[in-house]
Image (cartoon, rainbow, N blue to C red; front, top):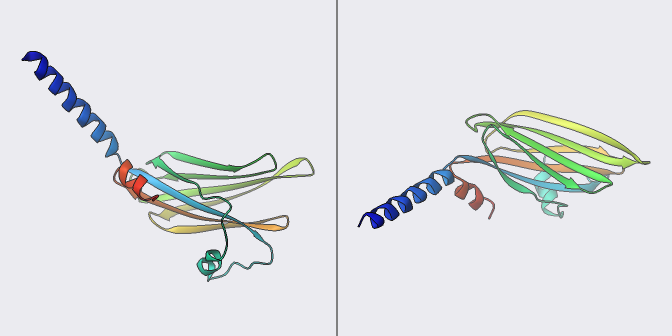
Length: 154
């Protein structure tokens, strides 16, 4: 009888432990990256313009609150890096975008920073590099658990 009691107690403890780890608040980060030709204008109708275009990349990740999350996309000629960090309660986030491109064998880079972006808000980063415009649509949203954060990606 004692063995069954200990096994049951162990099972309930493990179940509780796994449940509490899934209930940790997280920050879901979604980025949509476009490489546009210079002749495409970015204006107030940006969402309508982007619906007609195919993104280059669409990275998504979950991050712990008050921790930095880094997404890097690229190759040996071009690199796009996005770093997102929330505050302690996830009510806002800061975002940094860095573009690096090899020009004549040397790396050139551009960095942009946006502070205090409210939870759930979408922001756009845009930078001209050589003959193209890099546009990144970035959204960050706080969720009460890992499961809810993962479901937001579907």
